[in-house]
Length: 89
Image 1 (cartoon, rainbow, N blue to C red):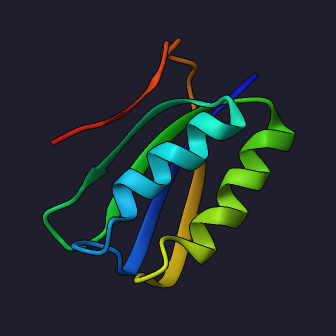
Image 2: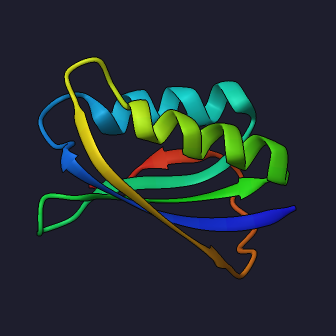
């Protein structure tokens, strides 16, 4: 089990990115959250196996159908113990 922090940059706000991210994370069985950032990026924290986190990171490069992802910055973090994958407002 690992905890990853991901910052996704590009056209990622106003394009259903957070909802699509939540759906993908839940499909993969990951827990954590996703939120918009004031600078126009999207930030997510996810916990799960390395294999599933890699699949999630790969999906973040694709994003929602209307998004245009320019970069995904991934860093390891400390386990929090999330119980679901939520959208933070």
